[in-house]
Length: 386
Image (cartoon, rainbow, N blue to C red; front, side):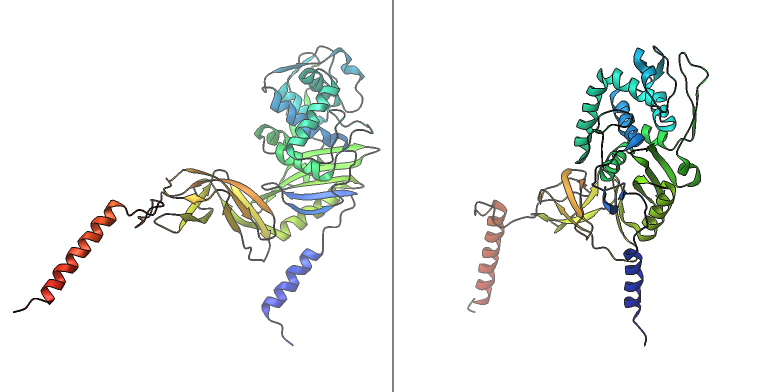
């Protein structure tokens, strides 16, 4: 018995999606970096200890708070910080740029502590800022209590929240550069014997498509990993928490992601994104272009039905390049994203016989008069008696 090709394709692609990645981590998630859409998850909203993946937020806040060449001065208490260290000495100065490299590559707890004290006055005050920023990003299960991730019962987050934070961090060009760096020589004011940094992100060394982001480990948190990789024209962000082997998990998650998803729609500023109805125009629809690069994923082998609607009604006249607010894009699965848009072309007002008050405009009177006069002449010719 032969089956139609469409049925075979359905079973083939359906089976691909039925087999989710095998992940040992207690929590994990894969998101599309462009939109934040969750592609796959496992207990992603369960609060867990993040260990040094905390430093993604610390580095992001540091970059958002200071210029790269500003100096951070280590407090007298810096030597009391345990764990991974840059071996800062009291009074030693380091630039913000090199401090962020030390946070991400060396996972330096003493540098995180220095940044917290210098940027906010204390660890407690800096933790408050971390929590405020997390809330702005949209985190719902996060409570930071220190800047480095050392064991603390009050310091928890979720895989989904870590993915949200990483997605925002990777939009920062400097953070993105740091996250993919393998080696770095830094400048310091006192300890000249420790200036070479090498990433602890071993996956970054194995996968040429990887460009970040951060490892983490404590006995309580287990092995944690936040990753980023770009293949087939799109980026995914992955989070793995409390896993016996994050690299095995990461490999499985990336293979699943790029085997099952592809770019379904892509538009840059100046390119057509969609068409929407326009009221009162000389044409029925208006082409819209995004103000930012816009990309939506779809499942491999499917024909996605992307739909768009303008939040505010388009009414003529409209000029090319005019900002029209946001278009809401739906990828066909119910996931929606708002895209700032402009008009691609100008549209004039369609002439109307009657205006909105019900009055006949002057040009209509002239046309009506001409028609009546012409009709009278024609009638006169036809009825002339010889």
